[in-house]
Length: 212
Image 1: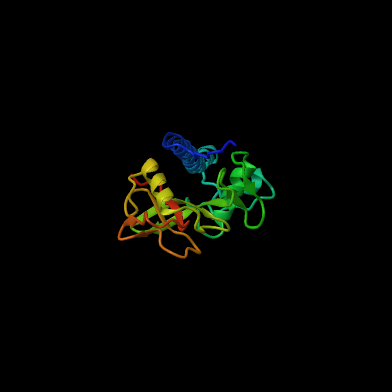
Image 2 (image 1 turned 135 degrees about the horizontal axis):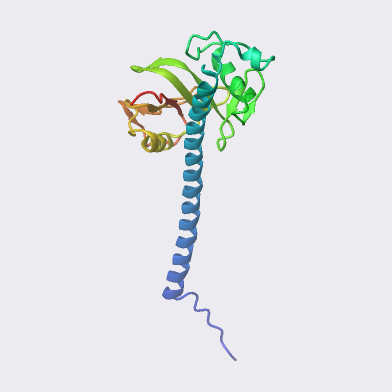
């Protein structure tokens, strides 16, 4: 009569299995990091593209989009700006992207009322541009946040990443800052620094390109 002995796994086999599991988990985490980095690079490209659109429009028409006082001459369905040299918060920030879209300088525009310029990767994110004074900074400002406008969309770690790539990486200085978005349930920053331990999407971006 034969007896069957189940020896189970040897220590070597268990070690190999653990190594394989570790490689799989590491690959998944690395893949997620790569996807996240690509999304943030796309957001940086959106920021640069928005600035390029505004600058190109101004070079072409001698006025900022939204502020063009003869817009209806070029595009009969568009509303004229007041021509005061800035993009006023109301109503020109909504007209700005419509003017750029009419001039065929912009895509990703939802022409609903109000019109929204949607981000390429963060599909629920929108860009708005207007004259603004904030935290000892003043000038033309680009706001990047969640829809409908300025909602929280990034974690503090993501906001700092963008700040480091485009500016000085510091919330309280420079031309770019991540700050609490509308609807945030906790803080993006405190004491002049990003709260990197906060995993929640609580930040939006303010960008003042004219500050050096």
